[in-house]
Image (cartoon, rainbow, N blue to C red; front, side):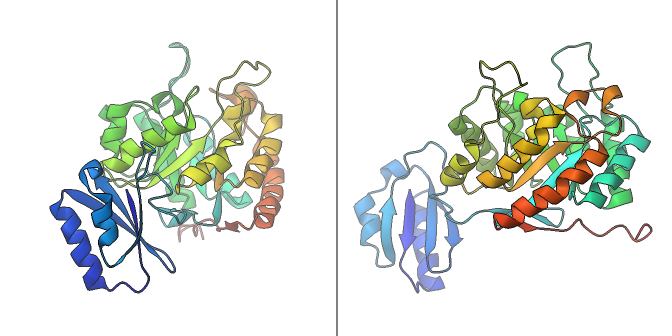
Amino acid sequence: MVVILKENVSQNQLDTFVGWLHDQDINAKITHGVHTTILGLVGDTASLDIDIIRSVSIVEEVMRVQEPYKKANRKFHPLDSAINVAGLTIGGGTFHVIAGPCSVESEGQITGIARRVRAAGATLLRGGAFKPRTSPYAFQGMRAQGLELLREARAATGMPIVTEIMSVAHLDLFEDVDLIQVGARNMQNFELLKELGHVQTPILLKRGLANTIEELLMSAEYIMAGGNENVILCERGVRTFETSTRNTLDVSAVPMLKKLSHLPVVIDPSHASGLSWMVEPLSLAAVAAGADGLIIEVHNDPEHALSDGPQSLTPDQFDTLMPRLRAMAEFMGKRLEAPLPLPEKDA
């Protein structure tokens, strides 16, 4: 249920109303707009008499939310959410590029790529330490050692790190990861989502290979219902009948998610196509559709990458792409934040 309050409601009136709701076992999430205050009510709202709510002197309008997701619903939170990731703001009119290799392979590889993508304008560093692979014989990642190399790259460049978690058992290893990624294969790993709801680390939640937009938002709801509302949605392509690309990028998901939810939305053009030459046009399309950011795979030697080389840009190709993305983002009215300052020893 959503309650829209009248203008000029005093803090005392608001506190009294919220206290009364709490006595009914209803929690209220308060959103203050420029001219309007909105309460998103969570709990057994079916037992509430909507006419009684409407009769309260400070209430302007009451609406029941029909969608099964509440906290992720734009009706609860009309303004775009802005998620703080280690001092960077994602959403709320900003635009970010997350870049780095599919897999961490060595100290020189991850730190070298981090320096290159940062110089080109990327603000966050991605890199897989734990890798979910279709084949049990494929490279599974460097695991804990890979996480340590990501930390070293962060120390060298000042870039917040983004990496994928695959199991609740690994949660302790991710305590100082800046943005925890939930991959497509784990989008409906509900036990993992519940546990991520108990931390305050921001979560990058990828859409599953064959999941609907509503299912993606319900997975976000699992995390948010646990108390962690720092969720960023990621469209990375869905499985269709088409075989010429790895997946089919659903560009329409961006405006639809923006209509249904207040959460930031980023696009992964690398996994969507599986082809490096398609990354640029898909990235530009994503920006034009209103995305808040991109997550792009960059490798210093794609031909010899241990995973997903064919979809990875070289650092030189990334250098060429960034000015075009910057121009498109600015045309769309997005504000590009600069990378965080270099650590003092390297400044």
